[in-house]
Length: 396
Image (cartoon, rainbow, N blue to C red; front, side):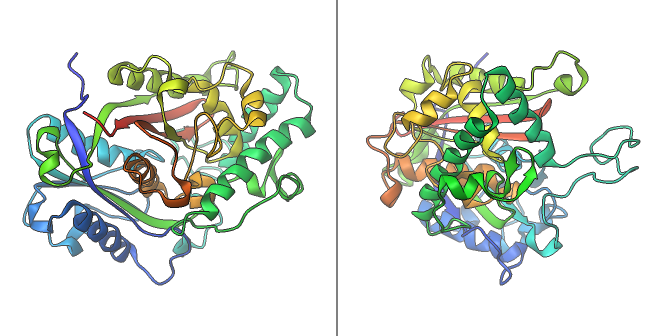
């Protein structure tokens, strides 16, 4: 199978500040991010030949992009749960790789705060079967779903609850430190381990600071053929691997599901590594943006993506392996936890950070001598997932 490695390059990106953007509507956020990307790539809207917009709750159709005044080109709306922004970038990248167009636009946007909801929308009452189930159960929250992973992980790997909670707290502290260095992040505050451990419980053992923020925001990428990339800029970023892996609820249906890994994470990342030619992700990747919707998921992702051996992520957390100064910096921009999680925008926001890191433009968050970066999204929950992984590099 012929892969996408070095066929497509990202030549421009833009990202709004994430947060409670009461002053902006969906279209305003799109314009803000898109015009940063256009300026970054040195192009105008008329240069775009095809576009994809990813949004879960905040856009009705392709017409949502009308404020960009694109010139009668194909525009498609896509949605793939929390991997929606990545899905828009995947579609644009494959179109360019296939020769359908030379310059394509990927947009991710979400406006969640105006709904008044305290969390992500979803089935929560009897008879509401938006999740594809029979609709006869009561449903359960996203924090409850990931709390299952935490309690089982503590049990399987012999962690006392207080030990496990402190490890999770260190992930939140790390991500808030990184986010405090990022003016576009939703939250600008540092946290202490004690603050995280003692925060109000949302779904035991996950407390308030173990859960990502609900935010508004948009992010945009301009992609083109790799052989054209340096016509736009001297430092394009090349796509090395791109994979999506969708489960069929196997974990949710099987009695023997272990609740300490997510199979879609494992298979999606391994396929992306194979396409990119990566043998040892911990050693070869310079930085990674992973889907830390809850602190326990980031911990499990370390193992699912091959950064830590099974059951030993805690050792790497204690050693500072994934801090800005560590062996493999993870969520250098604050992650979903601190940057925020407007569902349709998150995948492209992750790519925005890796793009800046590989160009050496991440300011106080900059990692040393980066060459390869990874973005990882998970849509769904424990036992039911959509995993999207991109590997990108600054050399062809």
